[in-house]
Image (tube, helix red, strand yellow):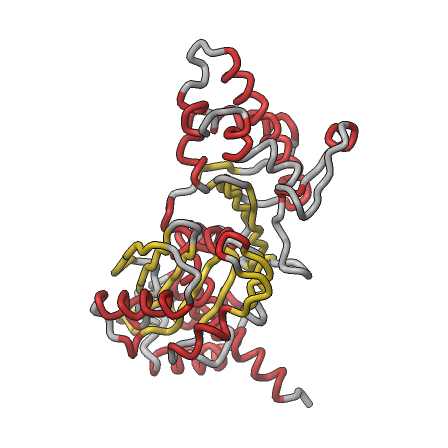
Length: 373
């Protein structure tokens, strides 16, 4: 006999699968959902009835008759206005707060000065909710992204030196201010989920190049976090030449790879990323050499990650990505020459909104798998 815990887990999984299928493939009938997911008609009907009752989906009307003249099936659609999420991207300089419906459409956005004072952050969130005009009874949760390592199970910030947080449980500190469930994750992970929410890609690598460099991995639609919540820390990548020259990773310095591919790497040479990239191939030999080396190092890493993880797509975001349009084709060509595994490579489309949008997507994903919905 199956235990109740297992039955509850299967019920949650089925609910998530059915809702996501309706959202992606609408308009769609119950019969088509059953066939697509391999679930019984009765299971799909039970799940759909629950989603209809909670207004997450609605009936659009009868579809076309089957080829054999069979009964028309009722088409279902996703109701994006059934709920709203709040995304908070806590950066070193600013805090971006975005409120969206359940289909990632932004209904409110505000930028506040950054702070490590939890009460002030809570006030920012409350103010944004009030100013947005959304029905607060329809808010399903709050997602928070921070630029540091996060224990996503407990909500503890393992280390975020820029804000003076170390072994600091942000979730425990901020949850008492709100009745909604709150979820905390790393900002690069959130940005990846934001891009995925819009792009619908289930297997991707997100590379964030700003003052530093990091990455996030999404495999089969799920974020890969790692045993110590450190998956994607490519700033620590090291190769034979680095070892040969005595380079090593330690807690007192930025990562070895980050010293070669990041905004800080350009600054160490006396330039901003925007300056060197905007002056590439304009007759300045030193700048051309800097960018050629940057492109080569980055392309080798992307090729290795492609060979190891076989993603459908690599998306490059972060502040430096705004200037990478001049070299993106060079990067694509080099990656293709370094690995025979095909991969799409493109620049991120969400810009500075990615982190907050992804925090909402993260909250939405977590809530779908819990009993909050």
